[in-house]
Amino acid sequence: MIAPSLLSADFLHLHKAVDMVEQSDADWYHIDVMDGHFVPNISFGFPVLEALKDRVSKPLDIHLMITNPDFYIEGFSKFKPEVISVHFETCIHLHRTLQHIQSFDIKRGLAINPHTSIASILGILENVDLICLMGVNPGFGGQEFIPETIDKIQQLAHLRKQKKLNFKIEIDGGVTTKNAKYLYEMGADILVAGSAVFKAKNPQKAIAEIRNTKP
Image 1 (tube, rainbow, N blue to C red):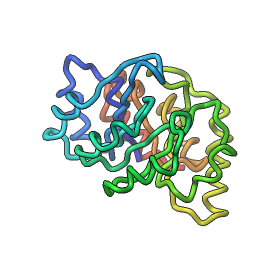
Image 2 (cartoon, rainbow, N blue to C red):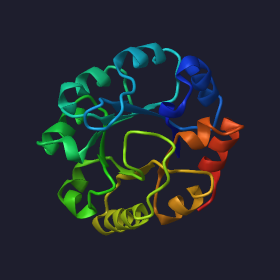
Image 3 (cartoon, helix red, strand yellow):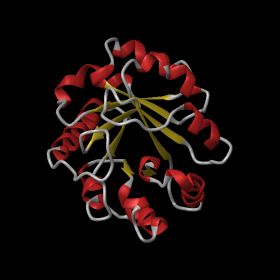
């Protein structure tokens, strides 16, 4: 699966980016919500999603890169996303936060930064539907993939098989047409691609290449 990240789209012509994704092989829209506090950038929030909701037909993958995500989960639930992901690093009462997401019949996503170990989240794996591994330090698009992320993908894939769990492994950051096949081979299920899609000469072709490459 592939989820193009609208963070890398041209905000002046966001409707054109959406129309392109609608006509592509993309599975989801990846929506990065940034608060300028947890990450050093500010992106979009409720007003932009309100404008998008009647124009998109593909599911939303909402990634809350914000402190105090509990304050906003109900608000984002109104857009009927496929999944809402919160960061391990921002949640004091993580089980409660994930239960809050689930209460709206939305898949529970957990994102972790590059410096956060898989060992830190061992106790929560049975309570999530998706693990989002950051392949870059969050906040900006266009960064290079952090190689150590590969070890985390393999660890998660092994744990999933060992514990007979069903969570999806998503990679966010540094995904390109060149490394997509390898990431799938290592165990990734969903690739978030921003610059690799929206900076490409042919975005629809880039989406197809990333999504349909065979592991």
